[in-house]
Amino acid sequence: MCGIVAYIGDQPAAPFLIEGLKTLEYRGYDSAGLAVLGAKGTTAVRSVGRIRDLEAALPKRLAGKVGIGHTRWATHGPATEANAHPHRSEDGRISVVHNGIIDNSGMLRDRLTDAGVTLASDTDTEVIAHLVARSTADTLEAAVLDALGQISGTYALAVMDEAHPDRIVLARNGSPLIIGVGEKETLVASDAAALVRHTSQVIHLDDGELATVTAGGFHTFDRNAEATGRQPVEIEVAAAEWELTGHQHYMYKEMLEQPDKAAAVIRGRLDERFATARLNGLNLSPKELRAFRRVKILGCGSAYYVGQIGAQLIEDLARIPADAEAASEFRYRNPIIEPETLYVVVSQSGETADTAFAVSEIKRKGGTVVAVVNAVGSTIAREVHGGIYLHAGPEIAVASTKALTNMAIAFAMLALHMGRLRDLSVADGERILHALKRIPEQIQQVLDNEPAIAEVAKALAQAQNAFYIGRVRQYPVAREGAQKLKEISYVHAEAYPTSELKHGPLALIDESMITVAIVPDDDLTERNVGAVQQVLARGGQVVALSHESVDLQGLDVERIDVPKSEPELDPILMVIPTQLLAYHAALTLGYDIDKPRNLAKSVTVE
Ligand code: G6P
Image (cartoon, rainbow, N blue to C red; front, side, top):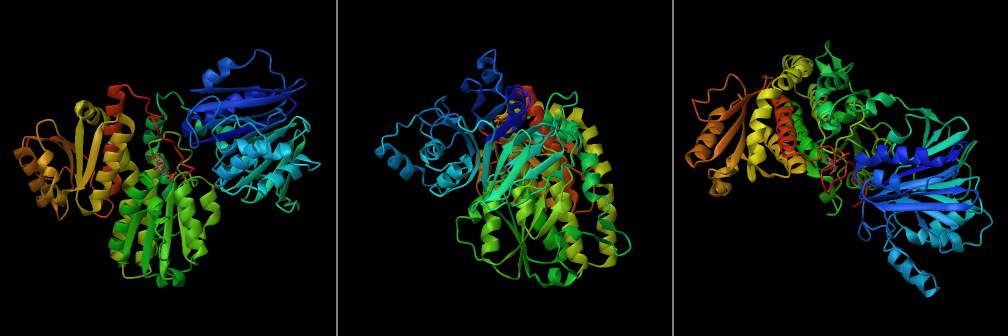
């Protein structure tokens, strides 16, 4: 979703701005722009489409050493050049890039129009440029504070002023903004990905915080203009983690990384002596953890589906009532927050607005909320009481794979930990612990089966519609599988609990319908095989995701076997072939796998 970059230093700003914007492309956008301040004033260029189009539209000489850039994902007004950022004051003196949403922009637009200002776009952002320009304050910092006093909403902002060419002023409220400290240059981005090639020294601004950046450094302060004295911290991820390293797609690279990354999330967290998991980052004592009577998991998209896998694991292993809900729904229904419920939010990016809002709402009502998060130092990670970091490394592809797998493993460890504080026996604890240790190599075995899965995917690519069905523990896997297929191959797919098939969807089965049925070796195998028979009897085609030990009774299905784990952990492995199926279907159809249409990696607006 929207991205910000900014540069001030001893080098021309444009190359960093373009490179930074390209790095942020993965987040999803529809237009882009930049403004560079040089000896002859501001040069601003904006364009609809890809960053390479913006790059092509730049003047040959663009020597200014101060600049701001932006990728826009349309919210207020369509993706047009006029709506792309930077937005500028009427005299061109002030240039602004903004992520987030200004809630009272309608009122401010009317007020500015009444005052004689001609608005040049449909956006909420434009008002900021006019408000800063109209401030009578002496300094740019004071003018930005003036403007912020009139707006309500969420923002990450970078403001450039021709009257103060030695600085860029930043402000953050609900949308991330990171300062990178370099040698004779200061860099800014809304995502660390754009900074890592240049510096490892960063400052994540806090909500309510502002900063002035200059070529020589930075100064952070609050809304009362009091210094906040922030110091840089070291980024832990190496720049190489953001590269494609010879693969055709990030999604493919990230799927292949899963055995290593799964090992990373488990590393140091299994306690053989007590047959449990060690999760010190939760910041919850055994006594506190035992006191919870329910667990509520919240996430969006794939993270929500993994939350459903997590809820089942917690009920299975810890015998605590648990459920998962879409954070995007939770936030709008005035949720009841109970002191005896442990709230667990789950997010790869740690920036998803709906999930972050759920965190604030739970905290505001006095609830205890922890997070399962991948991005270190992200908004959600910093807001919660504690959590489990996923150690999956940066995930670039919109379709989540390695982060999702590590989320499921993290939930298994949380369930094991909570279970062993309650009634889970040592023997059962050991059973789960040893199965967890084998997960990375078993993921590798699924990946090794890629050629066979790719073959099956060709049929999915030709389908108009597909069903994904799974029962109880495997139903969330079906939901996630269907979502992946939809997201990247645009084949319409729906997930149903296998038990529900006969209650309606069976009506749609005919020769053209493919059903991906999850048929694990567990106490429900016979019932699942029965459902497959019902589909076949109506002429439907079936892909069975199964275990070798399952007798499919010679049925005419395309079969993909995955290695067997313990029944509670089987869903973790069952997800892997659904990733490969979606990937190869999209590859067959020739789509832009890493950047599916209309989607963003990290949805930072409502
Ligand atoms: C977006 C992405 C999904 C992702 C969801 C949650 O909708 O397109 O792929 O699952 O956000 O993202 P998060 O970063 O919170 O895990």
